[in-house]
Image 1 (cartoon, one colour):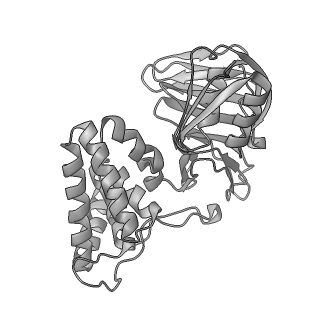
Image 2 (cartoon, helix red, strand yellow):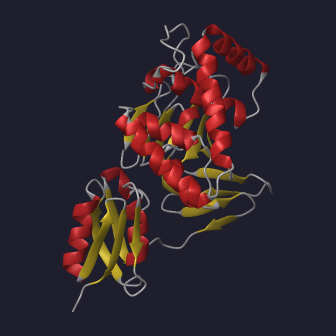
Length: 350
């Protein structure tokens, strides 16, 4: 199987290693083959594969008997979990986690296995959040709490925020960044060395944006994408209705599949994360905690009794436990850790 084409300057390794690994017994499939099977499951099951992709998959499947074993296991895992009730699925996940850890399987491998299972309900967010499928088909991605800077061959600089996945296409007559998950800041490059400067686009499921010589941030947020322009201008196009508008420096917009809405002043700086902070201005405590939870695994729950407390300041995101402790001290709050992944913020006992 040939490697996927990647931008050489983005330093992103392929998810799929070449075939030909020497396997052990039939019941001992190497972890790298499980990784490959997961990546193929995403390409085959969650997309419409073209002829080249299908041929590459067929070649991989026949290259080694253990490839077929790995593929069968991933397909079986998906089928088994899809038919379980949510509570039973959650119990099964916990039992599987304990067994895999006892057998020495790395947590990374375990989470990738569970994420592809398609579990619904309570178990769904556990699997999906830890290793979302978007990362498996992306050219570059970040883990929860991680930020990453990329320099591309056209001179563009991308900064990826926590839990982000992008695909990068710089060939042909245009430059396209596909934001599949999360948030990024783009500073477009001059695209030197070519007769004509290629248009620079950012694609999302909600619509497209063309940079007009600019620096701007894009964040996928529920039912739309947030666009915040720092320099230059960005022309936005909705996916379904064909509406368009131009965003200028200092403006923030919501780009939906069917509408464009200019936002009023935000309660926090939309690009503060590039400095590792949340810059809040009279922000609701509940909203601040939602932002803070993006940088840690698990959930932060806010008691309604303190949800509307206004907060202003600069809050670090690299050590969320320390930030929670600071909030507790300054706002007279109580922080309850049921587990590291389940935190509740409420009023302090009087």
